Amino acid sequence: MIGRRWYGLLLVAALCGIEAAQSAAPEAPKGFEPLFNGKDLTGWHVNKGGKMSVWGAQNGILYVDGRGGGWLMTEKEYGDFELRLEFKVPPRGNSGVALRSPMEGDPAYAGMEIQILDDQWHKNDKNYKGLRPTQLTGAIYDVVPPGKDATKPAGEWNQFDITAKGRHVTIVLNGTTIVDANLDDYKNRADRHPGLLREKGHLGLQSHDGRVEFRNLYVKPL
Image 1: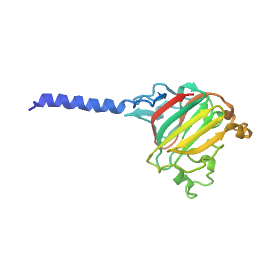
Image 2: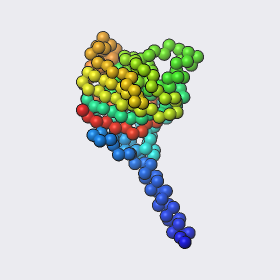
Image 3: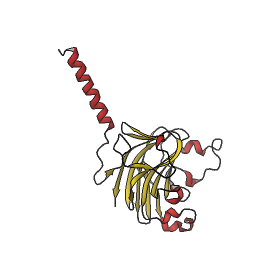
Image 4: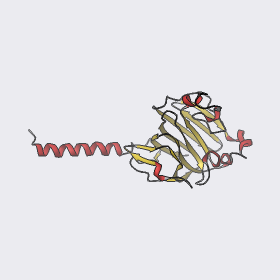
């Protein structure tokens, strides 16, 4: 029989072990490097004009509280890469993933934004009028619409696998390829979206509407 004192010490140790396990980032897939350590925002900075106070990390989750505040960007820049991440958007939520972006300006135009949205809520004209296909989840925002709807409902985890290699960008959402684009086919949009011409830049996450959560963020330079 374990005495109360020893039982209490063992219980504290067990709880600490659980907390440590929850806070640690899972092992990266082969060939990938983690972008998020699971416990703090080491390796990330907000872009010019952004607010670090809206971002946080806890128990393997990187989150934003949805009070605006711009973009959270990687310290490193990436040119050709494969990016994997999971995201969970709340009802009415809106966010995005930045690719090849500078630290100044709106990544949706200065770089590229891969849209994250509660599609079902925004598709309802009673909630939001005039939603365009290039504003749906997985779109290269305002440029290339998703070819299929592979989103899961608000409140469920979705998985992106995004590959940018030269002028070719593919986006796989929950195992389904929804964008397979040659950026040269959209050079006529470069006046409004000069980021389409960039060869490298920072990766980022958007603070827009609602508490959006991210986990399992990994990148593999190509």
